[in-house]
Length: 424
Image (cartoon, rainbow, N blue to C red; front, side, top):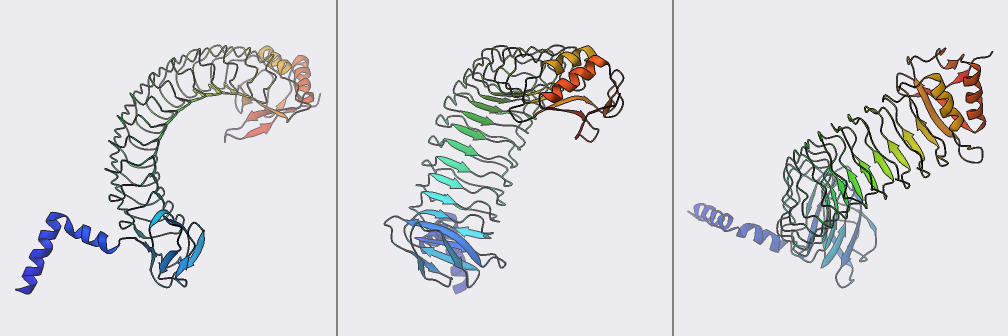
């Protein structure tokens, strides 16, 4: 009869949600760290609200100073930290479990890079910073944590994440999980969103007027509307299935990586703040980069370009325009240029001569690197990595070498072999 009464009592508590509350009360002011059998030493930092020492159980010491990084040696499989903790740092310890339910005053928690399979933070309503990436979570319940400002739950196995209502959130990193959807509507304070390497088929970023960095690459997006994100500085949307991308109004954009999509056009005119552009591996037939005087990196390789005007891009340091249909390329007056790749185009010997003669002088700078052609690519009088070419080509080749340029052929394995002139 007693056993049945006890069972009934437990059932009633579970139904009312009181059993969890009882457990949390028992752990009030305590953090319980599960220690891996192979990691008896752990490094932790804990800060108490009043600066008093942190009390310890399950270690060779009984306390350590608040705010001081401390190496603890566990005597068993659990370490208990006691006190009115407002900050706990316990990352990279291979912790197997972490119970922080009793730390109701906690504001910052850094428990990333462990082997945790779960984390209950539902009662930590004052938490504003949570780093729990690189663990083994399949779920994370942060609903109700309205004080949260920074959330890093990257590199886990989370299938769904509910961040609705977290209006104070300004940083969200949930990359490399198993998310199929992500609702960020209403998160008007969000400045940094990284959700790359998931399984998202759509992403609605309307209304995120504070967003400065959007990293949504390596998903399954077929469309992405970013034209209202006027504060955006860095956009990484590569490796998706985008057929179009309107960035015309993003005049503050500094970095745009939209490579490995299905774009047939890209209008970057008036993006005068742009410094890095990678639009490679698309199906773009033309791109106008004139006037982008701050651009220092341009990848536009593996497209369908028949011409490319980079004149006036005085800051340009790296240009890769290989695997297109170019018949000419003018690199004159590009004083900052130090790396150039233009193999696999339709450049005849006279076009190559003009390029070599136009390379900037780098005798007083770090040597320049240029990839002229690929292994197996047919060029006039060319064989292997030696060039038995015309007198004009040989003169241009030597002139480029004298200006401190190394000239390469791309080999089939993707590496480069320096080109040597054959002896006359």
